[in-house]
Image 1: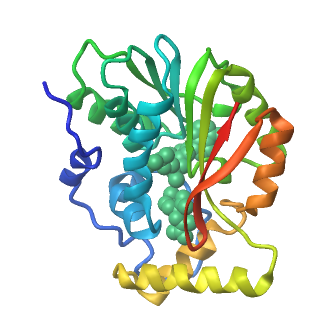
Image 2 (image 1 turned 90 degrees about the vertical axis):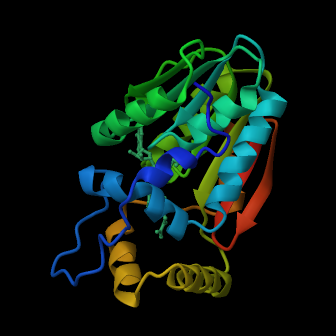
Image 3 (image 1 turned 30 degrees about the horizontal axis):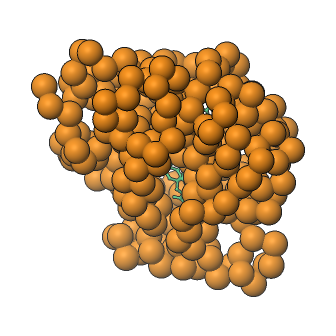
Length: 256
Ligand SMILES: C[S@@+](CC[C@H](N)C(=O)[O-])C[C@H]1O[C@@H](n2cnc3c(N)ncnc32)[C@H](O)[C@@H]1O
Ligand SMILES: O=C(O)C(=O)C[C@]1(C(=O)O)C=C[C@@H](O)C=C1
């Protein structure tokens, strides 16, 4: 079996368009990664996160540059495995242990079958159902948190990043993608407006945008780049840089 080059190819056969917030609802429930979200997730994330494909593509390249032989490569909050497969593609001939972790049983079940059908047996790749808060990390060279930390309660974020920093071998990196907040309220509002315009351009209605925003309230908690930078340094990283940003969506690289 030949692994696909485009990590989203496998998701292309998922037919479902995201219409989860298209009908008016009296009570908008808090966002959860349940069956309904799993069935539309590739479409939802592609049409909601500007630059998502670019980030996934670059995770391959960053893995090619930073992965070290016989270490672990972790994808934390792997959802359907887009970043996991991007890491796998970036490894080339390097022998690493790839581990994708998610605490949504529905995501994990679908991810396991997608990864299995696309990966030759000699590649060491595992998708595990677990809370990333309690995982005992093995020595790692590349760790990915692609739009996952934002769902962890703020008070748990430092401890997780400390455990990641401790697990990274010298020369290892953390790739951290997040929805950002901004300290200047004028800029914060502008970024939200431009993001909503992006969603409109992707076919979402004003109602869908408003209801999704409500469902993410107090579930996805964004922080500013300076806050992330300060916390990552406190957690043990020696350098933290932004390598991608489009509006309020960004990806950082943190060096051990
Ligand atoms: C926005 S999605 C991540 C997208 C994915 N990384 C990608 O690149 O396609 C966030 C994921 O994090 C998972 N998640 C949230 N909190 C978690 C936790 N404490 N432990 C493990 N997974 C978690 C969710 O179930 C969800 O699948
Ligand atoms: O739709 C939004 O406004 C988002 O914030 C996008 C976002 C994310 O950043 O994780 C939110 C939930 C889904 O998991 C997919 C994407």
